[in-house]
Length: 225
Image (tube, rainbow, N blue to C red; front, side):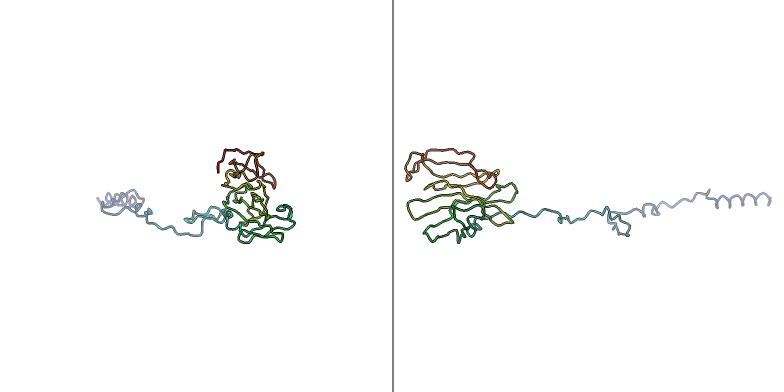
């Protein structure tokens, strides 16, 4: 009888050691595998193994490469600008004319006075808003000569570009800039009328060609003072 029980006990011991015996976990014990899973509040710690070529996304956007905002000109800046430059003279004056509060007086009695309204917009295509403004030149006689002056935008500062003479006693009603074109509405007269008479409201459209403002079209409507 002893010889029979001994081999049986030895076999049972070998089976237990070799993992053949199943051990049941109590139903109320926590699942070891589940406790090892991260939860929604798990904090990730950088262990120094991140790939520097592919950094983790940041909550703060990187704006170091964003283009700088192009500053538009203002009508107030024009009041202390100059008329004319080395290559584009203003009305034949050899030197640029400095404006003070939008005005200049010459030794010959000529007075130059910047007028309203002023228009701001891009005429050169560089997305930096330029300026167009009417200017009145009074030589002291009956003539009151109106001009349209353009200033380019160089680093947010007005730089004289060119001028268009629109005639004697032709007051400007409005100026606007859209789609790289300047539209000027002013009062004028038929070619056979006297200089003192204004009977036409003209809407003229200008476009920059090189360093000149060139009229590309105009329409006329009757005007009664």
